[in-house]
Length: 242
Image (cartoon, rainbow, N blue to C red):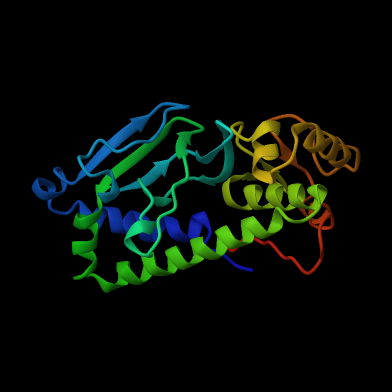
């Protein structure tokens, strides 16, 4: 299964942002550049938060849902990711889903707060950006479905897949190894995999023993991506489109 990677969406997203900011006097009232501190919760300052869209220029954020009053990380956003400030399901369906959640900065971030109507108005006269965002939205939906499905697999396979996705999407390649950001910890992996941290810790130690990981604690370094891929069903294929 292929998804739009961070690198493939970066250039068109930069182009879209530059396009929106062409008219400085107009864009200044509809676009705000924000410096976000680590662990800060991303919230809209507009009167109608549902009309706010965030674009991450730099940094990583976690999407966390609350269950039994505790936050659980279910997904992440990184460079040049576009996401809505508040759910818009009630505008598209005949029912409403209320799910306590938050978007928390996992690192220091640079974010643009964009008025949704301002963005949509500009898409009418530039169809190529509309097509790009439509493809991005459909890819994000497929990715969410995939992420939900892999959490049904055994914990060791789920962990291996999450590690490979993180490495491919936000990891830094050094030779044949991939370095994950320090924001990715054992507890983050446990939350993403919907497993107890003790279980994840055991599987991480196994990967270290097999020579796949450098260590079982952050920052994680994946030394052998091919060996990591052998830890889950061969019918699943995850590869970089860079």
